[in-house]
Length: 256
Image 1 (tube, helix red, strand yellow):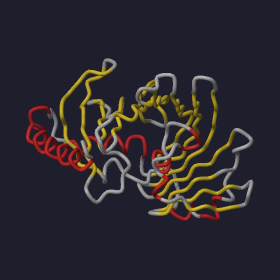
Image 2 (cartoon, helix red, strand yellow):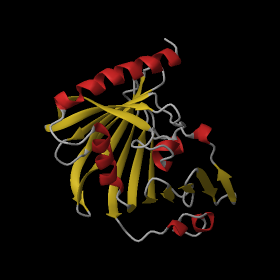
Image 3 (cartoon, rainbow, N blue to C red):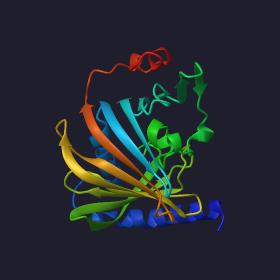
Image 4 (cartoon, rainbow, N blue to C red):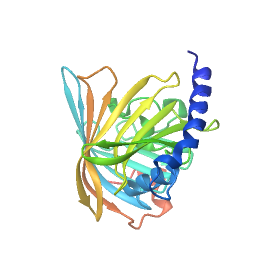
């Protein structure tokens, strides 16, 4: 089936499901509001984090550590702290522009939108996952399709279809979000032909800086069970003083 036909069929299914939304909803929140609350829970108005990543393949494993800063939907910065060969690399999104500072060659490289679907640092995360070029809240139309129990949590299952004008890399996304704390427990990402590309799973839910969030997230490519990427949140602070001026090319070269 062609991608255009698949797109219109997904839109038709979405319209039908939208009419059923009140059957499932037990609160006054719409599907979009549920996704927004889940997104804001892990993002805050601003945030500063430290993370570790394991890239696991059948014959090797690669470990990364990095720091991250974010302000709303338009600003983010990621600084690699290890391994030594990658230390000092910085990735930044500032509104619609994305940049990569490579200190080993002294070059500032603008990242084109065409590279958003590529793996970040060889992992199963995409550049879009890290730089947040697209927004799960703004760039998709949301519908509540059912309610399920996942890992003992009552969850909303929400389908997300990209808006026609949105520059996104996914043809469809499914998310399972807990009813009580709006934690994203599971996600499935599909291409334009409706084929599953990858899934992510959230574990080790803990209170960090006053918020109950998952601290370990595993991304597993479809049909490649021996491959996965594991992300650990080791520290995070929300709603800190972080001005727009922090997200500059000059600061990319200075941060540590």
